[in-house]
Length: 227
Length: 219
Image 1 (cartoon, each protein chain N blue to C red):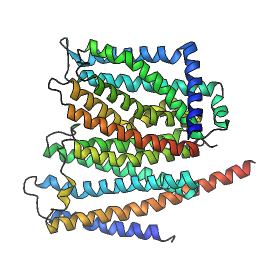
Image 2: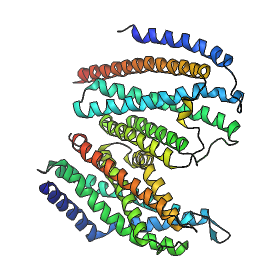
Image 3: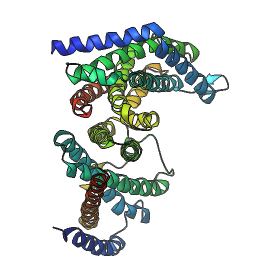
Image 4: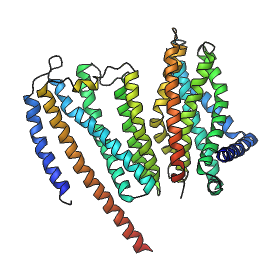
């Protein structure tokens, strides 16, 4: 078990080091998230006032879309230089490769979110300080669910044709529970009359989703990536 | 064994012939009237869809673990049928909703949204198999498993969300004559489903044999 975690940590550190040298994914996904916010601002602001729950919705759209971009790029990098095969040939458990990739993606996505979430809060007047820990937990749990399923599918699709289109087509319906729980939970915090109990039950559902789907991904990653 | 699918098709055809007469004869539901009768096809189609989802999920697990090709053929057949019967559910539902709720579709109802989501998962499954290129059957198996595991989340959200959809418990409280017609229709759909599943699985097996023969010829 510790050897798996150690290998995963090494893989994550390798990814983060590559990223730290050119910062391609961090910059592009961050500004892509901003571009999403811009597009949705025109759709959901009426007469200068954002619609009810608009901030929660835009936040999760930005997380989902920029996350998809990060997933695609993270594995495109491995494909271009044929390094995924090298990773899979490494004498470690397959699960370690999955966990390492997941961890580096989580660091990236959460890093981007620490900037986008406050920006959205400022632009749409969302009360970020009303329940900061609950909000942070919702965003973190949602990101883990999204990246947990996304890492598996992005890794699987590396060798498939039309992978760019197939990734969102497969991923979005499966992470719908994450989006619903994230948006509803965040909206419950941002609402004029906040309901923290509702937000907490959505958080519990997200954690349950994460546990089930990350376990499932760990289990299928080996057989799927075997040939 | 080979005669079983045609036999089932004939049985399904006979049962389907009787179904409209039964539905016509059964009493009108007191508040909704005629439009409620769509329920006798809507509910069986929904039950068949979810049966198919589970068949696909189980076949996908078997394929992923044992790599038996028959399991893969069953999974494809089940995924296609889930999309087909899901389409029936998604068409008959709004027809009823327009009359009963005044709108074709509502996003406020968990069961509608989640049926749509499940349908999308299996459409994505078919797209993956069609456009994913070689090796996509393994990837599709994962999509099938994930899609099936999603179903309990469907039911949880039904209970948590306030919902306008009639609860499934309504089926237990039906008067006997109405529940007889409903059961008749459910069995009709399931017999048809079994026949189609076997025929489609056999077609897929035939296609695989043809592919193998073609590859053997090329070598």
